[in-house]
Image (cartoon, rainbow, N blue to C red; front, side, top):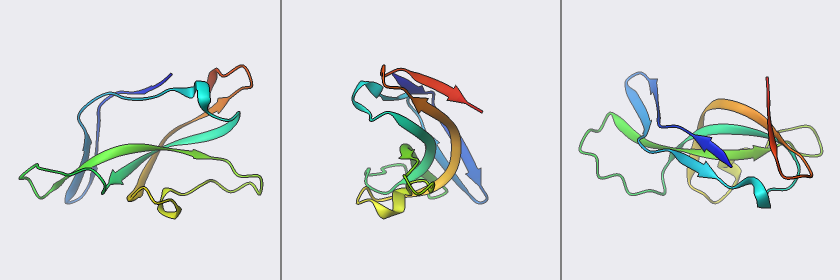
Length: 100
């Protein structure tokens, strides 16, 4: 299980906030290398009256066969990359290992 604690990213003047712990079950993820990206999540209805705060989410971007990383903007998930939070490798045994 990948667990990402609540976080806040600030890119003046905007802040991007994930107020809850986010989880991804890695048991059904194809083995390979992944980047954990913080994204601006446009799909979630944001009822926050503060216009300087936006909803943040995470996107698990796979390393493609050509060596490039998947980009969330190329998927119909309505989000935009903000920052790389980390990388991990999912092995055939369905466990994850942190990589620097």
